[in-house]
Length: 265
Image (cartoon, rainbow, N blue to C red):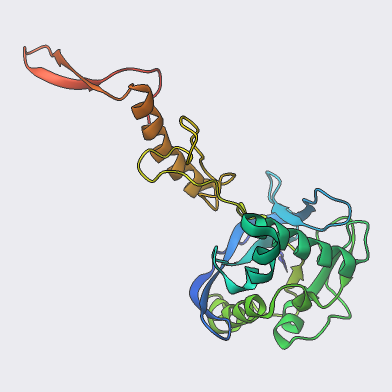
């Protein structure tokens, strides 16, 4: 989260930062800003009082003092950081990992949905914050050692991205006024419902079409929409509604038209 100052007709700031070369000590990972909210605020998204999860939003006027976005580090289905969770929880390892991070954040914040926060410069140096700039999160924040919540490979990748990529893409991004809030763990589904690559139907269940973020096939609004287009074609194929018919046009020539099923895309 960054505090911004604007007046008159000057628009609120926005940014988009990304790299797929953030080094975690062993390999490269993707790190990117996600769901950037200009003139926005950070809000609670927890579903359990003993867990802390945050999200970001902007009101229509986008006129708050802050700008915020998630900072996301990619985790693959076979990622070594999930090994201990996979051994105990199998295919639900991602959910167990997610809940573990949220519980750690809750303990670090002291409960009551208080969010642990850390200055960006302290995070990079691996030291707890003892103070914090103002925050848009309304339920309270607590300066803490947020770098201790996630596994070290994820923290190292984020540090590398911040110092060697993001601050070069947007000079001044790394500063004492930058404030990390822990944690945002729900940028995409931690479980994927398997589907056939050709029919798009769930493995073993005909006419069930897992689609978009909830099913584990997207990581945002645009990618979910694109996935939906592909799945819609498969649904039409299954229902026999995408066949081609030959009609006569005004000039007596034959032309092919799709059956009208009430919508277009």
